[in-house]
Length: 309
Ligand code: NDP
Ligand code: OXD
Image (cartoon, rainbow, N blue to C red; front, top):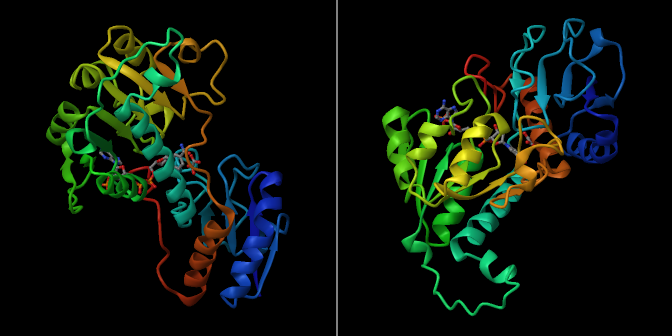
Protein backbone atom coordinates (compact mmCIF):
# COMPACT_ATOMS: atom_id res chain seq x y z
CA UNK A 1 0.00 0.00 0.00
CA UNK A 2 1.36 3.41 -0.96
CA UNK A 3 0.34 6.80 0.43
CA UNK A 4 -0.76 9.51 -1.99
CA UNK A 5 -1.32 12.99 -0.61
CA UNK A 6 -3.72 15.27 -2.49
CA UNK A 7 -2.37 18.78 -1.91
CA UNK A 8 -4.46 21.18 -3.96
CA UNK A 9 -7.17 23.63 -2.88
CA UNK A 10 -9.90 21.82 -0.87
CA UNK A 11 -12.57 22.43 -3.53
CA UNK A 12 -10.47 20.49 -6.07
CA UNK A 13 -10.67 17.37 -3.87
CA UNK A 14 -14.39 17.13 -4.65
CA UNK A 15 -13.57 17.06 -8.36
CA UNK A 16 -10.55 14.79 -8.21
CA UNK A 17 -11.20 12.23 -5.50
CA UNK A 18 -13.39 9.86 -7.54
CA UNK A 19 -11.39 10.06 -10.82
CA UNK A 20 -8.12 9.49 -8.95
CA UNK A 21 -9.54 6.49 -7.09
CA UNK A 22 -10.91 5.09 -10.37
CA UNK A 23 -7.56 5.56 -12.14
CA UNK A 24 -5.61 3.98 -9.24
CA UNK A 25 -7.96 1.00 -9.26
CA UNK A 26 -7.72 0.62 -13.04
CA UNK A 27 -3.92 0.61 -12.76
CA UNK A 28 -4.08 -2.03 -10.00
CA UNK A 29 -2.40 0.28 -7.48
CA UNK A 30 -3.32 -0.24 -3.84
CA UNK A 31 -3.16 3.29 -2.44
CA UNK A 32 -4.24 5.28 0.55
CA UNK A 33 -5.36 8.55 -1.08
CA UNK A 34 -6.15 11.43 1.29
CA UNK A 35 -5.83 15.17 1.83
CA UNK A 36 -4.07 14.71 5.17
CA UNK A 37 -1.50 12.21 6.40
CA UNK A 38 1.81 12.34 8.30
CA UNK A 39 4.36 14.00 6.01
CA UNK A 40 7.00 11.33 6.58
CA UNK A 41 4.62 8.63 5.27
CA UNK A 42 3.81 10.26 1.92
CA UNK A 43 5.01 8.47 -1.25
CA UNK A 44 3.58 10.82 -3.92
CA UNK A 45 2.20 14.36 -3.77
CA UNK A 46 -0.57 15.30 -6.20
CA UNK A 47 -0.11 19.03 -6.23
CA UNK A 48 -1.34 22.45 -7.31
CA UNK A 49 0.94 25.45 -6.83
CA UNK A 50 -1.77 27.43 -4.98
CA UNK A 51 -1.87 24.72 -2.29
CA UNK A 52 -1.09 25.54 1.34
CA UNK A 53 1.78 23.06 1.04
CA UNK A 54 4.85 25.16 0.23
CA UNK A 55 7.52 23.51 2.40
CA UNK A 56 8.45 20.05 1.08
CA UNK A 57 11.18 19.44 3.67
CA UNK A 58 9.13 17.08 5.92
CA UNK A 59 8.19 14.79 2.98
CA UNK A 60 11.34 12.73 3.34
CA UNK A 61 10.04 9.57 1.65
CA UNK A 62 8.16 11.18 -1.26
CA UNK A 63 9.26 10.08 -4.72
CA UNK A 64 7.67 12.79 -6.87
CA UNK A 65 5.45 15.85 -6.95
CA UNK A 66 2.78 15.43 -9.62
CA UNK A 67 1.48 18.83 -10.67
CA UNK A 68 -2.12 19.29 -11.77
CA UNK A 69 -1.24 22.45 -13.70
CA UNK A 70 0.64 22.71 -16.97
CA UNK A 71 2.37 25.90 -15.82
CA UNK A 72 5.00 25.42 -13.13
CA UNK A 73 6.45 28.91 -12.66
CA UNK A 74 5.11 29.08 -9.08
CA UNK A 75 6.94 25.93 -7.99
CA UNK A 76 10.20 25.69 -9.98
CA UNK A 77 11.92 28.14 -7.65
CA UNK A 78 10.88 26.32 -4.45
CA UNK A 79 14.18 25.47 -2.79
CA UNK A 80 12.61 22.96 -0.39
CA UNK A 81 11.72 20.73 -3.34
CA UNK A 82 14.47 18.29 -4.28
CA UNK A 83 12.52 15.37 -5.76
CA UNK A 84 11.28 15.00 -9.36
CA UNK A 85 8.52 17.41 -10.41
CA UNK A 86 6.15 16.42 -13.22
CA UNK A 87 3.95 19.00 -14.92
CA UNK A 88 0.51 18.31 -16.36
CA UNK A 89 0.20 17.21 -19.96
CA UNK A 90 -3.47 16.26 -20.07
CA UNK A 91 -5.29 15.27 -23.27
CA UNK A 92 -8.45 16.94 -21.93
CA UNK A 93 -6.64 20.22 -21.21
CA UNK A 94 -4.97 20.06 -24.63
CA UNK A 95 -8.32 19.63 -26.38
CA UNK A 96 -9.68 22.61 -24.46
CA UNK A 97 -6.72 24.76 -25.52
CA UNK A 98 -7.05 23.72 -29.16
CA UNK A 99 -10.75 24.68 -29.13
CA UNK A 100 -10.11 28.02 -27.40
CA UNK A 101 -7.21 29.01 -29.65
CA UNK A 102 -8.97 27.91 -32.83
CA UNK A 103 -12.10 29.85 -31.86
CA UNK A 104 -10.20 33.06 -31.24
CA UNK A 105 -8.08 32.67 -34.38
CA UNK A 106 -11.28 32.22 -36.42
CA UNK A 107 -12.80 35.34 -34.85
CA UNK A 108 -9.89 37.43 -36.12
CA UNK A 109 -9.48 35.60 -39.40
CA UNK A 110 -13.12 36.08 -40.40
CA UNK A 111 -13.39 39.58 -38.91
CA UNK A 112 -16.47 38.42 -37.02
CA UNK A 113 -16.65 41.49 -34.77
CA UNK A 114 -17.68 43.73 -37.68
CA UNK A 115 -20.98 41.86 -37.97
CA UNK A 116 -21.57 41.00 -34.32
CA UNK A 117 -21.33 44.62 -33.13
CA UNK A 118 -22.88 46.64 -35.98
CA UNK A 119 -25.17 49.31 -34.45
CA UNK A 120 -25.39 51.32 -37.71
CA UNK A 121 -26.51 48.25 -39.72
CA UNK A 122 -23.63 48.85 -42.11
CA UNK A 123 -23.77 46.49 -45.14
CA UNK A 124 -20.07 45.69 -45.49
CA UNK A 125 -19.89 42.78 -47.93
CA UNK A 126 -16.12 42.39 -47.85
CA UNK A 127 -15.17 38.73 -48.48
CA UNK A 128 -12.79 37.40 -45.82
CA UNK A 129 -9.61 35.69 -47.02
CA UNK A 130 -9.32 31.94 -46.97
CA UNK A 131 -7.29 30.30 -44.22
CA UNK A 132 -4.60 29.38 -46.73
CA UNK A 133 -4.01 33.10 -47.25
CA UNK A 134 -3.45 33.70 -43.52
CA UNK A 135 -0.24 33.13 -41.55
CA UNK A 136 -0.67 32.13 -37.91
CA UNK A 137 2.46 32.09 -35.78
CA UNK A 138 2.60 30.11 -32.55
CA UNK A 139 5.31 31.07 -30.10
CA UNK A 140 5.90 27.84 -28.15
CA UNK A 141 5.74 24.50 -29.93
CA UNK A 142 5.29 22.26 -26.91
CA UNK A 143 2.38 20.00 -25.99
CA UNK A 144 -0.17 22.79 -26.47
CA UNK A 145 1.44 24.81 -29.26
CA UNK A 146 1.95 21.72 -31.40
CA UNK A 147 -1.64 20.53 -30.90
CA UNK A 148 -2.93 23.99 -31.88
CA UNK A 149 -0.62 24.01 -34.90
CA UNK A 150 -2.08 20.70 -36.10
CA UNK A 151 -5.65 21.96 -35.70
CA UNK A 152 -4.94 25.22 -37.53
CA UNK A 153 -3.14 23.36 -40.31
CA UNK A 154 -6.21 21.13 -40.60
CA UNK A 155 -8.29 24.25 -41.23
CA UNK A 156 -5.90 25.30 -43.98
CA UNK A 157 -3.91 28.06 -42.24
CA UNK A 158 -0.24 28.64 -42.96
CA UNK A 159 1.35 27.88 -39.62
CA UNK A 160 4.75 28.87 -38.26
CA UNK A 161 5.97 27.72 -34.85
CA UNK A 162 8.83 28.98 -32.73
CA UNK A 163 10.56 27.13 -29.91
CA UNK A 164 13.80 27.11 -27.91
CA UNK A 165 15.21 24.00 -29.56
CA UNK A 166 14.96 23.00 -33.23
CA UNK A 167 11.77 21.10 -34.12
CA UNK A 168 10.29 19.28 -37.06
CA UNK A 169 6.50 19.33 -37.21
CA UNK A 170 5.12 18.25 -40.56
CA UNK A 171 3.43 21.09 -42.40
CA UNK A 172 4.63 23.72 -39.91
CA UNK A 173 7.46 26.16 -40.62
CA UNK A 174 9.56 25.48 -37.52
CA UNK A 175 11.88 28.23 -36.30
CA UNK A 176 13.95 28.61 -33.18
CA UNK A 177 16.41 30.93 -31.47
CA UNK A 178 16.74 34.73 -31.80
CA UNK A 179 16.96 34.75 -35.59
CA UNK A 180 13.97 32.44 -35.79
CA UNK A 181 11.98 34.78 -33.55
CA UNK A 182 12.53 37.75 -35.87
CA UNK A 183 11.42 35.66 -38.84
CA UNK A 184 8.38 34.35 -36.95
CA UNK A 185 7.28 37.81 -35.81
CA UNK A 186 7.62 39.25 -39.32
CA UNK A 187 5.13 36.63 -40.53
CA UNK A 188 2.68 36.89 -37.63
CA UNK A 189 -0.62 38.19 -38.97
CA UNK A 190 -2.06 36.35 -35.98
CA UNK A 191 0.32 35.49 -33.12
CA UNK A 192 -0.53 32.97 -30.39
CA UNK A 193 1.75 32.88 -27.34
CA UNK A 194 1.94 29.42 -25.76
CA UNK A 195 5.23 29.80 -23.94
CA UNK A 196 5.87 29.05 -20.26
CA UNK A 197 6.71 31.89 -17.88
CA UNK A 198 10.47 31.59 -17.34
CA UNK A 199 13.30 34.12 -16.92
CA UNK A 200 14.01 33.73 -20.66
CA UNK A 201 10.44 34.41 -21.82
CA UNK A 202 9.41 37.30 -19.54
CA UNK A 203 8.40 40.36 -21.60
CA UNK A 204 9.12 38.53 -24.84
CA UNK A 205 6.23 40.53 -26.28
CA UNK A 206 7.65 44.03 -25.87
CA UNK A 207 7.91 47.30 -27.84
CA UNK A 208 10.66 45.88 -30.01
CA UNK A 209 9.01 42.54 -30.82
CA UNK A 210 5.57 44.12 -31.33
CA UNK A 211 7.15 46.49 -33.87
CA UNK A 212 8.48 43.50 -35.80
CA UNK A 213 4.97 42.13 -36.40
CA UNK A 214 3.01 43.17 -39.53
CA UNK A 215 0.97 46.36 -38.97
CA UNK A 216 -2.53 45.47 -37.85
CA UNK A 217 -1.57 42.04 -36.50
CA UNK A 218 -3.65 40.23 -33.87
CA UNK A 219 -2.28 38.82 -30.62
CA UNK A 220 -3.76 35.93 -28.63
CA UNK A 221 -2.15 35.10 -25.27
CA UNK A 222 -3.27 31.98 -23.43
CA UNK A 223 0.31 31.36 -22.16
CA UNK A 224 1.14 33.52 -19.14
CA UNK A 225 0.73 37.22 -18.29
CA UNK A 226 4.43 38.03 -17.80
CA UNK A 227 5.15 37.10 -21.44
CA UNK A 228 3.75 40.54 -22.29
CA UNK A 229 4.99 44.02 -21.42
CA UNK A 230 1.51 45.44 -20.76
CA UNK A 231 2.45 49.10 -21.36
CA UNK A 232 4.14 48.24 -24.65
CA UNK A 233 1.08 46.31 -25.82
CA UNK A 234 -1.25 49.19 -24.95
CA UNK A 235 1.00 51.60 -26.87
CA UNK A 236 1.03 49.23 -29.87
CA UNK A 237 -2.78 48.91 -29.75
CA UNK A 238 -3.20 52.70 -29.51
CA UNK A 239 -0.93 53.14 -32.52
CA UNK A 240 -2.76 50.52 -34.58
CA UNK A 241 0.39 48.41 -34.83
CA UNK A 242 -1.63 45.66 -33.14
CA UNK A 243 -5.27 45.68 -34.22
CA UNK A 244 -6.64 43.67 -31.33
CA UNK A 245 -5.49 41.38 -28.52
CA UNK A 246 -7.25 38.54 -26.73
CA UNK A 247 -5.66 37.93 -23.34
CA UNK A 248 -6.51 35.02 -21.04
CA UNK A 249 -3.69 35.34 -18.52
CA UNK A 250 -2.28 38.29 -16.60
CA UNK A 251 0.51 39.31 -14.23
CA UNK A 252 -2.09 39.67 -11.49
CA UNK A 253 -5.18 37.42 -11.54
CA UNK A 254 -8.02 38.19 -11.34
CA UNK A 255 -7.08 41.16 -13.53
CA UNK A 256 -7.48 44.24 -11.24
CA UNK A 257 -10.52 46.38 -12.08
CA UNK A 258 -8.34 49.44 -12.65
CA UNK A 259 -6.14 47.70 -15.24
CA UNK A 260 -6.40 49.47 -18.63
CA UNK A 261 -6.93 46.15 -20.46
CA UNK A 262 -10.51 45.97 -19.15
CA UNK A 263 -11.62 49.21 -20.82
CA UNK A 264 -9.43 49.14 -23.91
CA UNK A 265 -11.60 48.98 -27.06
CA UNK A 266 -9.12 46.68 -28.77
CA UNK A 267 -8.61 44.16 -25.98
CA UNK A 268 -10.72 41.12 -25.11
CA UNK A 269 -10.11 39.81 -21.59
CA UNK A 270 -10.99 36.21 -20.76
CA UNK A 271 -10.63 35.03 -17.15
CA UNK A 272 -7.91 32.33 -17.41
CA UNK A 273 -10.34 29.86 -18.93
CA UNK A 274 -8.49 28.88 -22.09
CA UNK A 275 -7.94 25.33 -20.88
CA UNK A 276 -8.59 23.83 -17.49
CA UNK A 277 -7.12 20.50 -16.42
CA UNK A 278 -9.86 17.85 -16.83
CA UNK A 279 -10.13 15.59 -13.81
CA UNK A 280 -10.70 12.23 -15.52
CA UNK A 281 -7.90 12.42 -18.09
CA UNK A 282 -5.55 14.26 -15.72
CA UNK A 283 -6.04 11.59 -13.05
CA UNK A 284 -4.98 8.95 -15.56
CA UNK A 285 -1.81 10.93 -16.28
CA UNK A 286 -1.04 11.33 -12.56
CA UNK A 287 -1.61 7.63 -11.92
CA UNK A 288 0.57 6.65 -14.88
CA UNK A 289 3.42 8.48 -13.17
CA UNK A 290 2.69 6.71 -9.87
CA UNK A 291 2.71 3.40 -11.73
CA UNK A 292 6.04 4.30 -13.29
CA UNK A 293 7.49 5.32 -9.94
CA UNK A 294 6.47 2.01 -8.41
CA UNK A 295 7.77 0.03 -11.41
CA UNK A 296 11.11 1.84 -11.36
CA UNK A 297 10.41 3.35 -14.80
CA UNK A 298 11.25 6.96 -15.70
CA UNK A 299 8.57 9.55 -14.93
CA UNK A 300 6.90 11.36 -17.81
CA UNK A 301 6.46 15.14 -18.23
CA UNK A 302 9.37 15.97 -15.94
CA UNK A 303 10.18 19.64 -15.43
CA UNK A 304 13.70 20.92 -16.05
CA UNK A 305 14.08 23.13 -12.99
CA UNK A 306 17.06 24.97 -14.55
CA UNK A 307 15.07 25.96 -17.64
CA UNK A 308 11.96 26.58 -15.54
CA UNK A 309 9.52 24.47 -17.57
P1 NDP B 1 5.54 22.82 -23.02
O1 NDP B 1 6.58 22.83 -21.95
O2 NDP B 1 5.12 21.52 -23.60
O3 NDP B 1 6.02 23.74 -24.24
C1 NDP B 1 6.64 24.96 -24.04
C2 NDP B 1 7.14 25.46 -25.38
O4 NDP B 1 7.77 26.73 -25.18
C3 NDP B 1 8.22 24.53 -25.98
O5 NDP B 1 8.08 24.48 -27.37
C4 NDP B 1 9.51 25.26 -25.61
O6 NDP B 1 10.60 25.03 -26.48
C5 NDP B 1 9.08 26.71 -25.73
N1 NDP B 1 9.98 27.58 -25.01
C6 NDP B 1 10.25 27.59 -23.68
N2 NDP B 1 11.18 28.52 -23.41
C7 NDP B 1 11.49 29.11 -24.58
C8 NDP B 1 12.38 30.14 -24.96
N3 NDP B 1 13.16 30.75 -24.06
N4 NDP B 1 12.45 30.47 -26.26
C9 NDP B 1 11.69 29.84 -27.18
N5 NDP B 1 10.81 28.86 -26.90
C10 NDP B 1 10.71 28.50 -25.60
O7 NDP B 1 4.29 23.60 -22.43
P2 NDP B 1 2.77 23.49 -22.86
O8 NDP B 1 2.66 23.58 -24.32
O9 NDP B 1 2.13 22.32 -22.19
O10 NDP B 1 2.16 24.78 -22.13
C11 NDP B 1 2.61 26.07 -22.47
C12 NDP B 1 2.11 27.07 -21.44
O11 NDP B 1 0.71 27.27 -21.58
C13 NDP B 1 2.24 26.63 -19.97
O12 NDP B 1 3.54 26.80 -19.51
C14 NDP B 1 1.24 27.53 -19.28
O13 NDP B 1 1.89 28.71 -18.90
C15 NDP B 1 0.21 27.83 -20.36
N6 NDP B 1 -1.10 27.25 -20.05
C16 NDP B 1 -2.19 28.09 -19.97
C17 NDP B 1 -3.44 27.60 -19.73
C18 NDP B 1 -4.61 28.50 -19.71
O14 NDP B 1 -5.72 28.06 -19.36
N7 NDP B 1 -4.47 29.76 -20.07
C19 NDP B 1 -3.67 26.16 -19.51
C20 NDP B 1 -2.47 25.38 -19.62
C21 NDP B 1 -1.24 25.90 -19.89
P3 NDP B 1 11.24 23.56 -26.64
O15 NDP B 1 10.19 22.77 -27.39
O16 NDP B 1 12.44 23.79 -27.44
O17 NDP B 1 11.46 23.04 -25.26
C1 OXD C 1 -2.26 25.54 -16.12
C2 OXD C 1 -3.26 26.57 -16.29
O1 OXD C 1 -1.09 25.86 -16.03
O2 OXD C 1 -4.45 26.32 -16.07
O3 OXD C 1 -2.63 24.35 -16.11
O4 OXD C 1 -2.93 27.72 -16.66
